Amino acid sequence: MATKKLIKGNVAICHGAIAARCDAFFGYPITPQNEIPEKMSELMPAHGREFLQAESEVAAINMVYGAACAGKRAMTSSSSPGISLKTEGLSYIAACELPCVIVNVQRGGPGLGNTLPGQADYFQAVKGGGHGDYRLITIAPWSVQECYEFMPLAFDLADRYRNPVMVLMDAIVGQMLEPVDLHENFEIHEYPKPWATNGARGRAHNIINSLWIKTEVMEGLNNRIQAKYAAARRHEVRYQEYRTDDADLVLVAYGSTARICRSVVDMARDEGIAVGLFRPISLYPFPEQQIADLAASGRRFLVAEMSAGQMVEDVRLAVNGSTDVYFHGRTGGAVPTPTEILNKVRAVFGKPPVVSHYGRTEG
Amino acid sequence: MEKVFGRPKGLTNVEFAYCAGCHHSIVHRIIAETMDELDIIHNTIGICPVGCAVFMYEYMSCDMIEAAHGRAPAVATGVKRVLPDRVVFTYQGDGDLASIGTAEIIHAAARGENISVIFINNTTYGMTGGQMAPTTLVGQKTTTCPAGRDPKVAGYPIRVCEMLATLDGPSYIERVCPTSPAGLAKTKKAIRKSFENQIEGKGFSLVEVLSNCPTQWKMNPIESFRWIDENMTKWFPPGVFVDR
Ligand SMILES: Cc1ncc(C[n+]2csc(CCOP(=O)(O)OP(=O)(O)O)c2C)c(N)n1
Ligand code: SF4
Image (tube, rainbow over all chains, first blue to last red; front, side):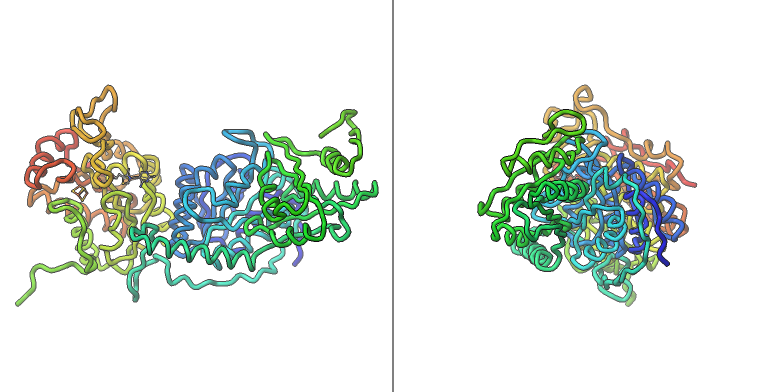
């Protein structure tokens, strides 16, 4: 039954979690993601699942750790400052090779920042964030439909790789209303969890631990984790391209900024400038080969982010100096306008800026 | 011949790495005996702290989880909420429970979380080398208050049982002092009761064990027992604070 519902991205996350058979949600209020714990407090008990408002983000992620140890599907959600508090727990969860899902509805930062959209937690999400060598598999929806559909994907990736998975959003994706098809065409795999600490009935006791005093054991764990990331880099790269075939310049953006860039592509094309869009969907693993291939065929890049320049570093790494990489970023909750980005595009092609409807030159 | 004393099944064969005469060993044994008596080894999940008891997961034969420093009550909450028919306990030192993990223990208690908490108060950070703890007594010397704890600088020791007893959530809170045979028997009884309460679904139980740290206190075990009796019990009087 195809039921289209007009809901916010944050609410779609909740329906997605239910569809993914999430067993437990632990969270702490913070704007702009409050719709998630609010909706979960209603949906989870209604489906016989566990919802608990924790005393802090620190407690919430450690409750997730406990529920994941018990072999259950557990998640938490937060926004930027709250995610910082969860990073200690995430390092432990990654070290213990436990599955879980974390949703970050990014806001303006640093510090307390503001509750407006931001994408400045990119480094924190894709480079690990906490201490030690670990990564979060990170996927970034750009629509409310994807908010819904990425939750079963996130839980599946988490179970398959026994690693925390982050769904990285921003205040626009979380707050915008769009019609969503709440279909249930998901294959929910049951993963055996013989490692779970759920009572040693009929087996030797299980231990979940990240303390390894001996270097060779600790290094062995690191090697095992890195091997998983290498496998993820081979199998879990996700991206979308729009009009890149004949593009001279490829815009690279994710989340709501990618939505804006898609409009810019059409605007530029109307002016006869051959621009395309490359949207990384998996931010870790990053589609580096795909970008390297585009670079090898002579394309230049313009990266747009709501940050002072974070994902652009991964694009530069992929391009490896073979072509030009330009950047346009806004911070502090500012959202780049299509005209602003179009002016960057025009500048790359030696054209003067257009004047926006507001009568001032943006950019 | 009937065997009257042996290794409880709740313990693995791994030898304790604790210093001689340390209460950690005694309390581990009591927990193991309790699991044996209640026949719950296969149904129990223990959460160990960061502190000298960090390796507890090697010693207990139930399933064990190592938590981040101070977070054991939150981890236990996560386990218990998704496996309500299992027995879940935390084992925490004073640095773990009353300093870095203060928020987690207060809120687990306030929620009446149906878990058992075994709290080892030895007035110091044993594992990191004998620094000041939240329970270090006024005037007590540690490596970070070498002249003795000065309340004008470092405030006063926290009485965890009394503090948590102000909450409506806990079902059972007791402080015990295992420095005598009678005290040991009380300790055993209290720990067993904290597990029984959980099995009966009564909610949050905490047993504070006044414990020694002969190594960091620079005493032999006998002196350390005397020091508990003469100094610790004055600030931390044993007794039942909540039982409902
Ligand atoms: C986040 C964090 N901070 C600090 C430490 C270092 N640390 C390890 S054990 C410990 C104190 C343990 O003292 P206590 O809880 O009293 O237990 P004891 O060793 O006395 O049994 C500290 C501070 C740590 N492991 N993690
Ligand atoms: S350092 Fe202190 S608390 Fe730690 S094992 Fe030795 S005596 Fe026990």
